[in-house]
Structure formats: structure tokens, C-alpha cells
Amino acid sequence: MSAAVTEFKRCVVVKSTGRIDSDTVPDLEETFKSLAKLGKYRLVLDMSEINFVSSKGWWLLIDVQKACKHLFRGELVLANIDKKIRDSLKLIGMDTYFKIFDDITSAVGSF
Amino acid sequence: MQTITFPGRFESLDNIREFVVQAAKQAGFDEAATYAVELSVDEASTNIIEHAYGGEGKGDIIISVEITDQDFIVILHDHGKPFDPSKVPVPNHNVPLEELKPRGVGLFLIQKMMDEVQFEFTPDKGNILTLKKHRPGTVQ
Image (cartoon, rainbow over all chains, first blue to last red; front, top):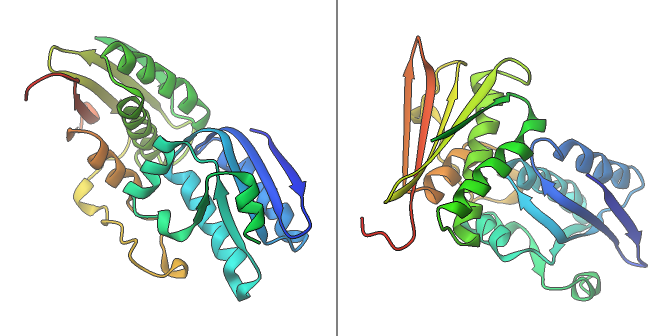
């Protein structure tokens, strides 16, 4: 799994591709850990090219959200989520823990 | 019925999902129903690796798919520790972010997304998980 990181003035966009499952979560986790080490806690995850997210993936994003919101230092927001993936997030009742935007411009503009 | 044996490793998940997705499409499922099957089987396989086998590379996952007139059926078979679904906590996500705990979401998703979920364990056969989803256009 590859993740591209693009820095904007007020936030960082992480664009991951493919699937987020038990096999790929460790790689994505490393990307978020690297950003945390640099003090980057205002994050957008661009999910336009993500086609699958398991519960393991959502728990990684919940852990990242906890780290970002700690001490009010930032937030992880999600953008461009496929409908079926968004429906599964809603089904498990975890959609309320993220701001979700339909496009990157709005997500970046929220910071 | 079509059966494939996969090594109990997370790197098998992609192939496992591809196997059941192809079969679900043959059963006539639309994109949303196919994703429900894909997600359920991924969650079940992950649970087998993590909980039944206690880690990667400890045993195989044998997966069969069957399409009947009424149903799409996936059977997952492993030789790990017995799984008792009654011991899995129901996830509570009506709590503040910092209190969220990663418990029971996989099983919850499977039970919500499939029409029938049946667990069996016998000492000689191991765990057998049967997942059923009604085919579109069938009257149950």
C-alpha cells in the first residue's frame, strides 16, 4: 500500500490507495506515525482511491483521531469516501467521530 | 460448491475477498450486497487468524462458496481454538472518542450484513462458520 503526503499551509493531505485491511494497516500506521513525529496533527485522508476498509482500518483511523484531538492540537477529517464504505462506517456507528467531506477542497478549507 | 484453502495470513485477505466477490457477482448481487459479503468474509477471516489461531501462519482457512436458488452461502472452516460468539461484547459506540474500545465490531458487522450466521465447533472438525445472504429477487 502506498500513501502520498502533500503539505498545505494549514494541514496535510494523506492519499492512500487500494484497501485498508489487517494486511495494509501497518504501512498506513507508519505514515501517520511519521507525521505525528513531525508534529502534524491537522490531517485530511483522501479516500478517493480506497476501495475497501475493514474494521481494523477504522480502528487505525480512530487511534489517529484520538492522537490528533489530544490537547486540541488538531483533527483527522475524511474526504471522498465511496458510498458503500461510508455506509459500513455508519452501520457500526463510528461515522460520528469524523467530519466527512465530499471533496478535498472543502476538507482542506475546513482547517 | 467451490472450495479453496488459504494460508492463515493477513496477506491472504486480498485473495480471499477476490474469491468471494467473484462468486457473489455470479449470484447476481449488486455492488452494495457484494461489498457486504466481501466485508463479512474479511472480518471473519481476520478473526480466525487473530483469535482462533492466535496469530499468522498457524493454520489454514478453508473457504467454500455455494449458490443455491435462494441463497449465496460462504462456509469458513478452521482448526483453531473454539470460537464462542456469546463471549464477544456488543460494541458500544455511543461514547466519547477517548473511551472507544476496539471490541466486537467485526462480529457485529457480519451479523448486520449477512442474513444468517451460524457457528459450529466440534473437536475433530474445528470451527465451521456458515454465512448466508439471500439472493436478489428470491422470496424467503
